[in-house]
Length: 350
Image (cartoon, rainbow, N blue to C red; front, top):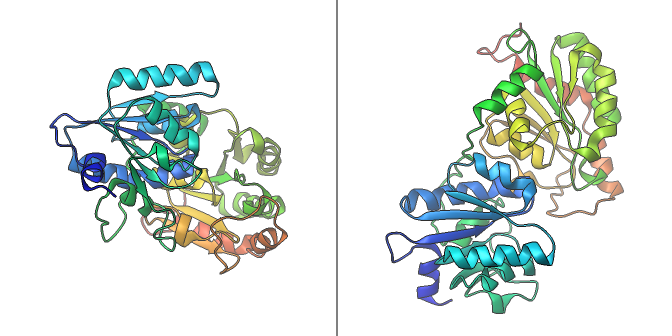
């Protein structure tokens, strides 16, 4: 690694240096990148930071405290070349590339950014000027990888992500969750982008809903994306008038606001889990074969329930072993974890 290149990627010689950060593509990965980005921003308060991302995470980055601007790129050659021209016009000094894909490194290279730091792999070494070894710190939380990319010292503890949810989104969430303040709200997110191998069984979620509505007198906020519509609708039917099915009805900022108004959120190892933790709500997070030491929620307000000690970083979308591990987490265990948050001395049940 060339010393001057490393310095340029993390510490500019100019007082008004301009850094581009190529964002991860998934909400959870973005949230786990935030602590290192916040650390870089704190060390470089007068530098300009732009984040280049896909449309699905743009509003998430607009809520983050660090970037000065958010640039969006889309699929297709026409829009790709529009992004390249935009990058060239903005004349960035350096770029830090979080994704491991070829395209994520090609864009800043084609945008003529002189210093480009990223992990090796995917036949892209020649596109980078500062190649970081892939897999360093594999047994640490994924959030530490950002410190490695930025060439920053690691703090003793990871700071929580810093998001500012727009007031308009909070107002809309309060209207959706009518009765907030008179009841405790439990957020439920039955989905996970990785598929069945990361989803607690729907029958278990349904059993949890029955207990919460019948015995705890809480209200249920059900959230998810288009792929979760069927599961969310089933939970809404089970909750009856105590439920609000918000699946597919919100953008990222409204989703964050809804989670922020909940007293506790039950979720799989998913982007929704990371978003809930990022806005400071307690989470009860359900892990099958994935490893909370690697991808657990940040911020410290979490109960982690594991169906296995195996701890794989990556599992197949269809894995009977993973589904069996998740199924071993009982609705009673999850109910007890939820109630331990709701019945804290500072949050009495209404």
